[in-house]
Image (cartoon, rainbow, N blue to C red; front, side, top):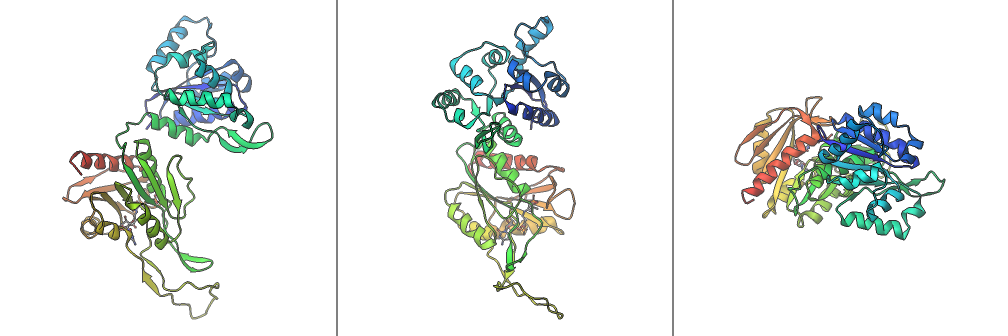
Length: 399
Ligand code: PMT
């Protein structure tokens, strides 16, 4: 998503300046071309040479730097940048930008640059709560700047509170978001993710290897493209995506209840969750003891959530996933028909690079008219993008 994008990274003088090194690495790893500008105070926390080495470009610090090529260079960088991110952003730089002050290299470049801006503040909690800082943040938001709010945690000054620089992943997510076309504005999209767990006794359950990666990628991409997103997930270790209304559930019955609660407000529903088809008929209140003859567990069918949604579909777009190990296409066509879907995403879960747990997926998208898109192996976020391209196409044709 960031490949070939030109990003200016502004670093200001706070203890979190060292975290900007990690942010730079991550941006470079994702294929961005990054130009770093630092305030003089920032150079006291981390040397420019670190940023220069990792970005492979000179670091811009001094407005009076005596180097013609470089001076002209920095003008063209601000003109050609796709995004400008400041991380960490001190109360001082936020105040300067809000007041239109440009008195050093970083603040001058911000003012000269028309690219979208992402600001990740980090400071002491009392500063974050100061009325002046709040006023300045509001001014930046009103001007269209995107603020990645700091996190709550232990601060450098020794107290616990709000002020820690947001996680690198969250800053990256906001950068990707400002660079993404908002073609899902006005849509409310419900995504399900992860496995369900069906209890056998207090310490045992039936489940499957779903990690939630596919569903969470769908939620992130939908959010970036401007949709309001509700994510309903079974038990996973992933962090709820910022800005996405996320609910965690355990069993298929719980998932069904919460999906139905939100279904009527949504225009699109994508069911990437691997819902258990069965649950134990009875859940033992006590841990089941070992028995030399083994034990029998009687299973009963869980409700098919997607089938139920299909029966009350009205004008919504309904998308299912299919985890298949054989007869991929025939089984998928049958599911489209039975569950009243607009299309289904079929993954061959027998491959280690696709389906459960992998960061990539290899899917077919099959629509209700029988059109098949055979997509190559790609990261799950790209699969998610293809799914939303298909939804945008359906919307264009009056769906
Ligand atoms: O989470 P990851 O590790 O990233 O893995 C992703 C994935 C492999 C789980 C995902 O890509 C996927 O294939 N999810 C659907 C798996 C599945 O349950 O397939 P199915 O063929 O059993 O079900 C078909 C559809 O009906 C699915 O949309 C499912 O959510 C839905 N369903 C199934 C059973 C049930 N009781 N209720 C349902 O709603």
